[in-house]
Amino acid sequence: MSVLRPFKACDMFKFNNINLDIWTETYGIGFYLNYLARWPDLCCVQEAPSGRMMGYVIGKAEGSSTEWHGHVTALTVAPEYRRLSLARKMMNLLEMVSDEIYKGFFVDLYVRCANTVAIEMYEGLGYSVYRRVREYYGSLGIGRGGRDEEDAFDMRKPLSRDPGRRSVRSNGRDMIVSAHDVS
Image (cartoon, rainbow, N blue to C red):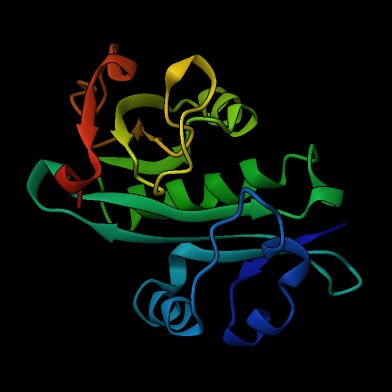
């Protein structure tokens, strides 16, 4: 049985099996260390009994007023461990910490519009598209349907401080903004 535990700095020596996936955004060592120092309770690892990393999530708390929220910076599971609900477990922990510790109004994340498997998973977890961000990941040209495959969906899930669900909208796929308009 695997264990969900805090992400440690030494885990960066063991996560190549996860980070080499084409959908996974990778960052410099300083970036990960900054997250571990500032938001350690929003960073966790799913580990196999052998000690092999199966997946991880890193997040942060940001915003102000009713825009105060938890943010999923990266969620990834190694290909050989997918479809075991590991992402769901890591997301549940990040959402719980964002809600109970940081008192956020919602959790948000950005996902490539072309990553339909991830979008469906997030929708199954209760997230909805808040807006489409043009060229968020840079431009690789025009994809299916004449849309840039490097656009991102900003997806959100309201938390207990948002009982009126003001942080989400039903027509998010129709709300298109520039990458320059998001922080």
